[in-house]
Amino acid sequence: MMVRNYKKRDVSGSLTDRERDILLKVAELYIETGEPVGSRTVKKTYKMEISSATIRNVMADLEDKGYLFQPHTSAGRVPTDDGLKVYINHLFLALGEEDSSLLNRLLDYVRSSGVCEIEDILSTVLDFLQNSTGYLGFGISLVENLTVSSITLVKVAYGKVLIVINFSPDYIIHRVIDVEISDFELPKLSRELSKRFRGKTLSEIKRELVEEIDTVRKEFADLSFKVNSQILSTLNGVNQLKLQGTSNIVNILANDIERLKEILRILEEKNLLLEIFSKFIEENKRVDVILGSETEVEPFEPFCFVLGKFQIGYRNSGVVGIIGPKRMDYSQVIPIVENVAKALSFLLNEEDI
Image (cartoon, rainbow, N blue to C red; front, side, top):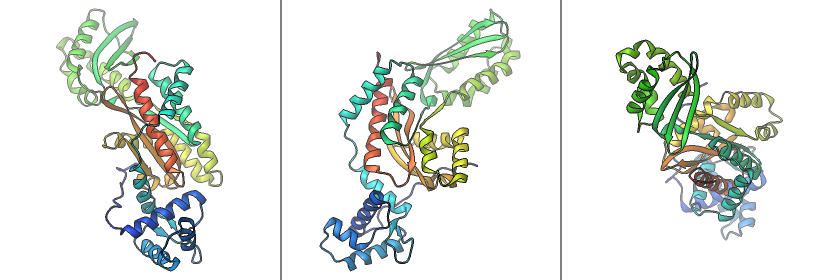
């Protein structure tokens, strides 16, 4: 199963002011109650001056345009995914202000845990996030965009070499690789690799590694294949996706065992999620909501992703967020994810946590 570039819906410009107003009200009521919404309910709840018949006609027009649908002939209407996107985009207009109380609570929560490594900070933040929302929290440090400052090879045993890749700012990858390199060759190879890759991003190194290693001095030619494959293996294992609160997904899908099995398989394999998050990191938005239908992965159809970017230095370096049902209180969840992402950026750029 492959994830195509998820389809972002263009839901702007096709609604009158009255249609937009009523659509937002229907979406808000549906999210609050989980029940189809009728014209009388809209009029009574919002004390609208127009008649129920007028509201009903507008709702029929919205259904014709694909923003609402009627689950039963005698029932009210519920928003389609296009309708939800209009509502969600409307909520984004209210974002942008930091919630200082949330930021301070999260900072205190992380500092009290005593963690200082990036992976441990991320895990602690995810614990806070899933406890705050009741949904599955996820996070990934996508260090593809960090720049390399040095690469060092250190012999630790016969046939075992420790590779240490230092990124700027303050991120280190290290792994013991299986390759035999003489004590004489090690420092030369370290200097050559550092010289060639310094200032380049991890993604650039991945693309160039085969070519660059093969152009290293002739005396290292016999090592090219082994060193190349081992370093590539190290770099490809960098982006580790963390999930917190999988039991929340189990609770949501308690009555749909087949879908639950498929979702758990996807969460275990993680590749599909990595594709979604890597695509988001390339976009301009700091926070976004991706409906399950936009991923074109059928098991995600009842779900949505609320995502925020965090930074290390001046680069977008990771994604944090939640996976929950499409019918969620977006007005609460979006600001939580946005401010958690901001707090995480702050924490990861502190010199002394």
